[in-house]
Image (cartoon, rainbow, N blue to C red):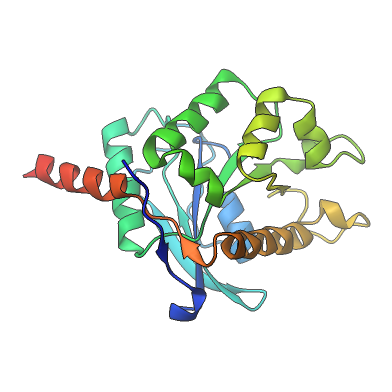
Length: 230
């Protein structure tokens, strides 16, 4: 399917729309709470969360209006793939004309075949074009070695390095548990990293000339899923 890009400048709603994707248990909901600065998203502490619905919340963050769409975890054994795909597509189409950015959430750990399967599934759902709008965000930043940055971490893994390159080199890190207070090292501060994430999203929007992501495939699959219900 061809991808269609529709202009959706922030002047229309003054709100950044951001979709969060990742494997169940990767820390997606905690990341959403960290970005919004408030416990607005339901968190499950197990990989099989059973949460089959998207959550969407809007809040002002550092002078910006931000809508975060937290999707059910990919490969969650409690949710069938068909239901998962339909729910993600439904939620995105409800936030028309489309998201300005995607965040792929990964833990600071070895990039395995399971993580690659998540990336492959994201590409299957949204096409290669999704990476033009995507930033990789690592959670569990406390697992970084002393003085290590995400750039250092990524360069040590060929597959991870290739993924970040597909995303235009965009990657950041948070720690939803240990980086809540202001440390001596600004890099290891959620407050600093959230500002960086938002700046990156706005730069991505500029690079895409103010357009948001939408895909003819999303509309087709949404139509098909609706027909299957009838």
